[in-house]
Image 1: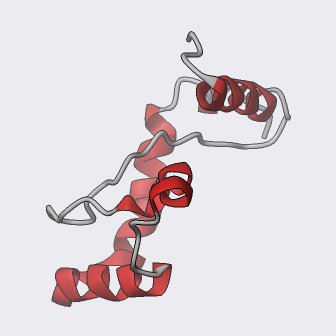
Image 2 (image 1 turned 180 degrees about the horizontal axis):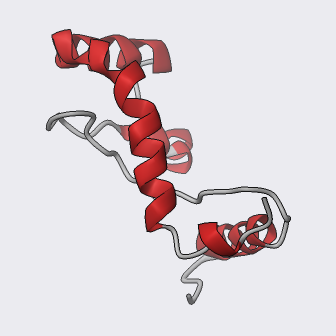
Length: 101
């Protein structure tokens, strides 16, 4: 990987620290990922842009309520699906089988 700015350099360094920690780990590189269905992207992850432009007008709680409303009855499936999703993600990791347990 090649850093393109300070942020990506920090991410690369932090991921290396995590890989070398000896802990069981999983690194997710997520953007605004829809939960069980498409939804409009939300700027919650853009702290520097928010600081400069002050455009974000919703709290994390507002977003959680919106996501829950968008999921409807499907949110009841999350406690069952979460362990299965975790296991699937760990199986996909090239590092999981080689890390210290």
